[in-house]
Length: 180
Image 1 (cartoon, helix red, strand yellow):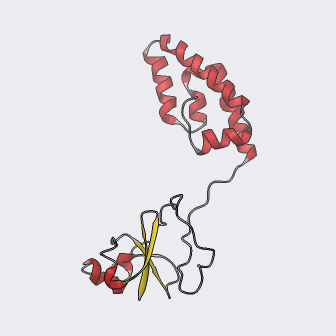
Image 2: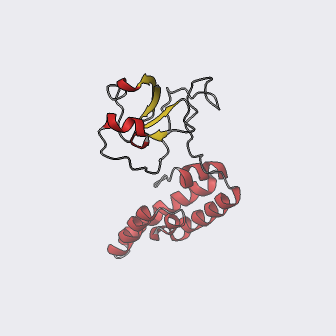
Image 3: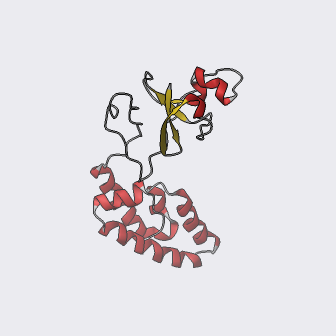
């Protein structure tokens, strides 16, 4: 029986069962063979338990594999034909919501311009680390550091407001770009 397995983000195989360990199969590797409905962890496949040296079969929840690397070619949906593994499924990227992006863009932009030294615009975007840095610099320097933080806030507020909703969403809400 031939098996495919995922080594990180690279799909390997097919290999006969006696060659899997030599090819780099690990207990946590995802495997598939003809007749299996989906990819499973190697340690949860009873016939591979002896190869991997596991004492007893204990089923575990299957985590999705990491996204493929750019050089990896995904087989067509439904498998690549007879005897080919089904495509590995990955969670989809979050959807763009224009209303949320626009409201957060406006709120964070205005807060950045008006009270940027306190880092409130960072908290609005869910960036607590940079927000705390700005707030603590302002408070711990008795307001003197707040001058610099306010200038940074003004610049960031203007940048937020001049970006399109799509650019703002991608840059600050998905990628979480912290500064400028």
